[in-house]
Amino acid sequence: MSGWGAGSSHDPFDGLRIAWCGRTSTEDLQDPTLSLPRQLDNSRAALPPGAIIVAHFYDIESGRKNLEDRGHGTAHERFDIPIPRDGGIQDLLAEAGQRNRRFDAVICESIDRISRRTFYGTKIEHELEELGVALFAADEPITLNGKRATAILTRRVKQGIAEWYAVQMMEASWDGLRTHTLQGWNVGHPPYGYRAEKVPHPVPAKAADGKSKTRLVPEPVRGPVVTKIFMWRVMERLGYGDIADRLNTDHDRFPPPESLNPNFRGRNAWSRSGVREILRNPKYTGHMVWNRKATTSRRGSKRSMANPPSAWVWSEHPTHEPLVTREIYEAAQNIGRVRGTSRTGSAVNSHRQTRRTYPLRSFVYCDPCDRRMFGQTETRRKAQDAYYCCQPDRNHKGREDRFSGHPKVIRVREDTLLDAVHDLFQRRIFGPGRHQLLAADLPQSSKQAEGEWEARCQALRKRITEITKKQDRLIAQVEEGEIDDAFARRLRTRFSELEVERRTKAQELAETEANPPASDHQTDLLYKIPMLQTGIAELPEELQRKLFEVFHLEIRYNDSVGIALIRVALDHDTIEGVAAMAEHIPGNENKRPLAACACAEDLERAPGRIRTCGTRFRRVVAVGLAHTL
Image 1 (cartoon, helix red, strand yellow):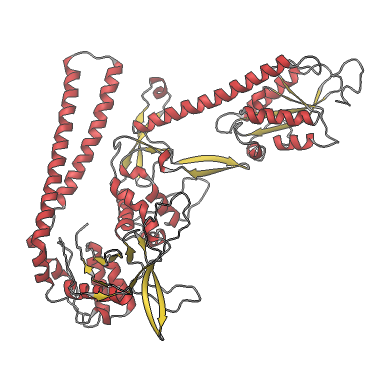
Image 2 (cartoon, helix red, strand yellow):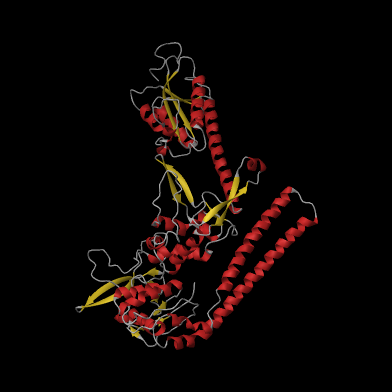
């Protein structure tokens, strides 16, 4: 270590140039204006006579970050720290490797200020040693010669304890937040559609300081918007952009989310990302969920990364009023995989090689894999034949079972499907004999649906009765004798859990009873839809697609059995959509449907066999389902 003590041949510390290295944790957890000056004072006090600090390197960041991500932050710029800054840890290491460096050794208050991870702490120490720079700590003996074994052992023990302490605190914090979630308390800002209901903190000392916990309560205006978004996604399989466009048509009915950043002025409109965040949030099921995202820091910037669903922490039972069912939420998560990259609407593809459109694009699904089928045109003998195809990508490493047994390509002729769809709409929806066809199929399906509905109601009533009895028994325990505070808290917690479940079941019962299955007298639904004077096949393609959209057309083709299931659904929006389109249909300008009413199930099987692109004869089964949501 030549150059040290150049001013004196007796004292090795005389004239020793020292670089001070400081670090404090994130600005949200510590006060850098206090912590860093204290570290510098303790380091300066530990220096031997003659040694002097000539450079100051410090960072405001976590000590558990990877070394390559250290020293790039700008958090120090937010504070008025009375210490000149020559850089961070990366700048210190860079200057240590230069011939004309300003320092001969480095000092810190404690070795854990270099890093909270033993590996990186020893790595930095080793790199400095290789460059001829000693690393001192103010709480350790400072020597330049003599035996080092005990000093190394002491430092390694301290580093191990520092890392253990950091990990132990993280695990304790994790367990606390997990228990917090299981008890139904909300973490973070309430999601759109809910408001935070503050509850006094259960710890008296914290309650006295004004601290509280929060539970989620639905907002009367925004809550129904969330339910509507999920129904559009699941029932109509709309994309994020299409849902945002619908929401932006009426901000009074669908108020857009507000920015959580007070320094950011939002555009006061719905966006694709805003819709996506709502559809991905499982808290709308009534369960409290935590650990959906993890915050990491790289190169000085914080990033939020999504954790896999397997890492999420769910409360065992619903803890607040749900806005959608668990089944609806899970169905919404699969829509993206089903939709693929298919566009919604009848607009022509903007690709320069586009030559034609496909009337059933986005309505046809491959039944084995549940993916949308895409249009394809094949020229044979100067004639063009259109098909709908499914050709899944085989590049799924580690997911070989995703399309197991799926043929390389599945195709079905467009004219075959169009004939069946036109027949369904012409005869069963807009035709003069639609009521007789419906009445012929209604009794059997209606009887089965009525039995399922009654069984569901009975099961919900039974469960509500059981919960009420359990609550009565808890109240009786309180009235029978004295109980201590711990037991009282457990009773209150259990009673609250039962009350949440009772309210949820009561809501489900009310919704179920309010939507009984279709009965014979409800066949007048079709009277609300006008009969067409013009054939469906004769309408312009754009008008046909609009009809398909308002009736929520869905075609599921199963190649293994050669069957296509065609489904349509009627709701209040369907009736309104048909009313708006009536004036554009030739021959129906003065015929408009009446107000929507209850509807019934409509099953239809198209007779006969048809020839498809394969060598086998296959038949198409057309199924039309109509029901009120």
